[in-house]
Length: 137
Image 1 (cartoon, rainbow, N blue to C red):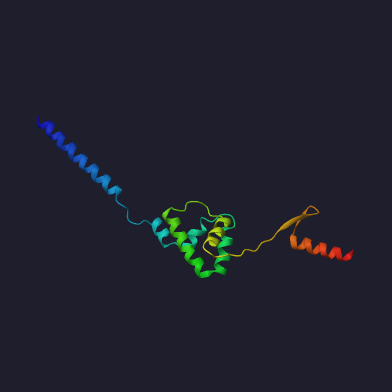
Image 2 (cartoon, rainbow, N blue to C red):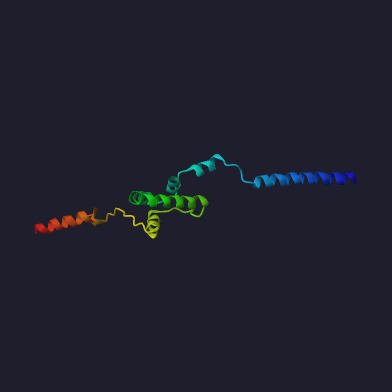
């Protein structure tokens, strides 16, 4: 009978050790180098990482045209990215829509190309060529 009580005591001790190990693993670990990097990372850099097609072009135009407002938007977007609320790629169209939805009409340089004689030329070149050809007739 003493062996049974001794066995129970050892089992209880082992169980207590296992519970202690589990509880220490659940506690948040001290900041590692990886989390330090994300905490000290520039908000703009964290946003750049998730920008897709033409996203950086839209961001640069916004920074030039609306520097103060863009800085605040970059900060907020960075917070949302770090918290995991934004976990998708933000392309230029989405970013432009975001800026316009908050009242910032970011102007983008646009160029329309059309096909002429098997080549793509800008619409302004095609129109200027047509007007010069019209004058010759």
